[in-house]
Amino acid sequence: MKNLQRPNYDWMIERYAFFVLLALVYLSFFFNLGSVPLFDLDEGAFSEATREMLVSKNYITTYLGGELRFDKPILIYWLQALSVSIFGLNEFALRLPSALAATAWAAILYLFTKRIYGAKNALLATLFMVSALQISVIAKAAIADALLNLWIAASMFSVWLYIKSDEKKWLYAAFASIGFGMLTKGPVAVMIPVVVTFLYFAFKRDLMRWLRAILDPVGILIFLAVALPWYLLEYMDQGMKFIEGFFFKHNLSRFEDSFEGHSGSIFYYIPVLVVGMMPFSGVLIATFGKIREWIKDDATLFFLLWFGFVFLFFSFSGTKLPHYVIYGYTPLFILMALGFSDIKSSLWIVLPPAILMLLLLFLPEIANAMLPKIKDPYAQALIKESGALFGWRYKMEIALLLAALAVAWRTIEGNLAKSVITGVVSLLLVNGTILPTYGALAQQPIKEAAIFAKKHRLEVVMWGINVPSFMVYSEKIVPRRDPKPGEIVLTKITKLKEVGSYQPIFKKYGIVLVRINSMKKGKE
Image (cartoon, rainbow, N blue to C red; front, top):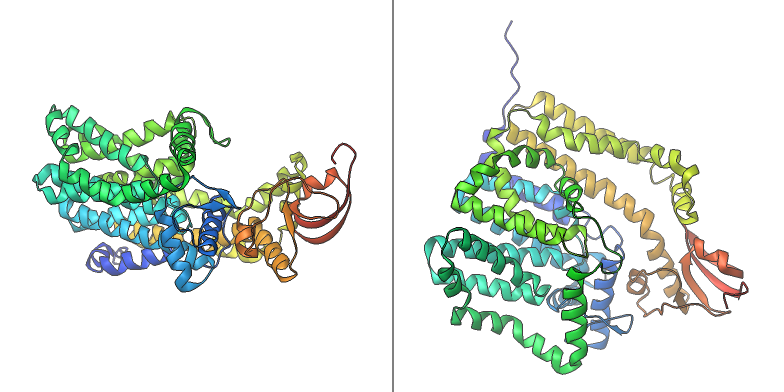
């Protein structure tokens, strides 16, 4: 009797790499792009600032809720405004610039890696990037981070090509990319390439070449031509309010102090990295054993310094947000590709996403088991009222994906083919089940309340809640303050304990619209 051998599809994946990556890019960056409500706080804030820009026709200074917003520079708002002007005010239009930026980011990662390490490693690096949980999330988010990561990757790849070829065109491409990064999120786009190249040239004992590169007059002129005009116009419009709000508050203060409560220990980014690299966290861990080899090679040393600086800098920063570490992910995808051939057991590939899916499968039972210990009425309401969202359909979708992963592991030979199947399954899980479910639970009530308020022309006050997406969907600036008797408020049910009497208007998953009749004593 002949031994049955599992089919090896690695050759087919390599042959049709373009179509494989095209499918993965669609699943990661465009699938359900406009079907999930905007997430607060960040998506709502960027989107509302863009809406107010279009209403006011002020394309230099951004406002949020009628107040000056100096959080980020202008480029993402311009791109979102252009998209909204073409496709209308909706989730698809607001997120499209990020999805396109992520697509360009994946394309330059593929082209750069292919140029240096060949087509197979380029396929692997791009597969890891496109499938990564954090990348898939920010690529569909109406925020600046996908665009920023495009410029960081472009600048760093250009720098490396300049280092190896000494061709000035690559140096000028780096300066231009840094300029666009400065126009997207500010000084961080300058800091990363400047510091990483300093560390690299210091390690190679060639700091004079570094100085010649960063002081290149043509390169500096290119950078200034790209970035300076808006900064000058904004300073002319707002003066020192811009300098203090943007440079001091939203840049220097983020490193020195915890900003808006976003703090954490120096180990904060270790679990973020493990979860953010899902489903290929196992591949990352398995390939980290090659650090000693990476240091010996110029290119891998450069990639290691890139990731290492970003990881350590933000680990010691006062303000910590999960997406900060993504600025150092691009080199990791290349390093993971280079170490992939040394992975012998496919468990490194399929086990982490399988564990994640099992946890998600039983998430409703876990939440209900913890319910007696939860004191927050809002959290209680979410768990109690969301049973339908986590019903048979939710469980069936995850169970089928888990089964598909198990079948692929048992029947397909070849780690590359298994990795592609793992990427597809994980993207269907995240973008087909998890984000739509979480969006329906956390954000759909905000959207429906806003549409209700818009339809009935209600004057609303936000109280004890900060959800800028409400303003996007209601297409109206909504003040945030304590309410007065007779006013309609958007709030969480937890705030109703401070109300003497009220008239219910809208309620869903702990989000309410009520008309305040009176406040309890001491709350007036």
